[in-house]
Each structure stands twice: as structure tokens, then as C-alpha cells.
Image 1 (cartoon, rainbow, N blue to C red):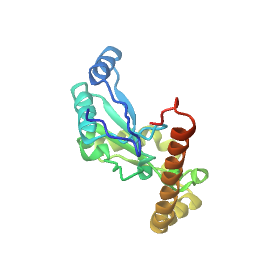
Image 2 (image 1 turned 90 degrees about the vertical axis):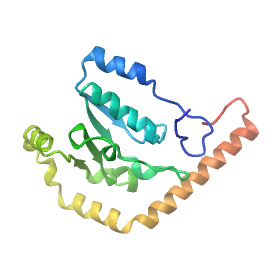
Image 3 (image 1 turned 135 degrees about the vertical axis):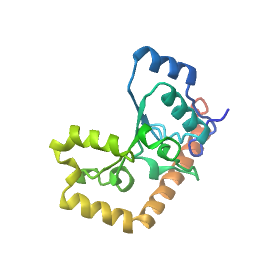
Image 4 (image 1 turned 120 degrees about the horizontal axis):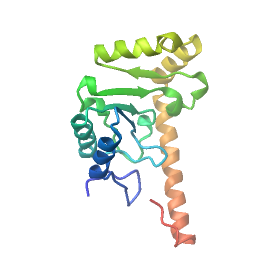
Length: 182
């Protein structure tokens, strides 16, 4: 139905929201770690799916930890919608960074977006001893350079990957009919 296609794919998978809610209720979960876009499948969640996730988590008082590190790698015109644009500030923590986008995970640069002040203070109390929010000079410099000057590189890299996806789909269709790409 409403599931977004992941790139050139003709099929998609979906979330069973009834089962999702039952699992949250039976486990008495307090947080839900959500990967958006999905990894490893590349599924870009539709606005309707994101809204339903927020509603289910809201009803069950479950905090959403949204890992959006692959957000810049939506292919074939798919658009990523940050779940924080739908949820209330106290309902979501967003994780991201340039590591996957620009191929620089070794710099160990990332960001945590916590819009709600109370939630941010609670996070800082728990994580403050790690000093992870201070970064290092290489990570900070690399992150700034990637986001400020890397748009053309990213665009070219995505076009290259999209072309390769289409080549693989074509080869599978020609030579391996029993394998269906999706």
C-alpha cells in the first residue's frame, strides 16, 4: 500500500503496526531505536509510516532514538523525512553524522540532536563523563569540510551508485531470471 519504494525497486516491505504496538506493550519498552532510512535495505519510510510510528510510540510513551546516518544516501529521487519534523521534541532523539555520507567513519564524527531541554540535560548527565560531545580537531574539521564542500562529490557518488544498481538489475533480468531484484 503506502510504503515508499526504495530506489529503483519495484517492491517494498512494510511495518506491521499492530504487531509493533503489541511488542511495545508486552515488552514495556521505554525506547525504540529506529533506522531511517533503513539499513541495510535502503527503505525510505513514507510520511504516513513515520506518522504511524510516532503515534504508536506516543500512545505507549516510548522515546524514539532515530538513527538517520544514512539520510543523505536516498537514491532515485527518494526523499528522507526526519522523524523529528513529525514528533514532539520530547519524543525523539536524532543521531547522524558524515561518516556514511562521505565515507569518513574513521574520524568518529557524529551528532546527536535533542531538541527538548529536559531530555538533553538527562542525556548530558548520563553521557557527560565520555566527553564525546567535545569532538576532536580532525573530526570537527572533517565534518565541516564534508558538509560545506562535499555536495558535488556526494551527488556524483550517488549517481554512480544508482547507475550500478540499474546495471545489476539489468544483468539479473538478462541472465538470472529466478533472482528478482527489489
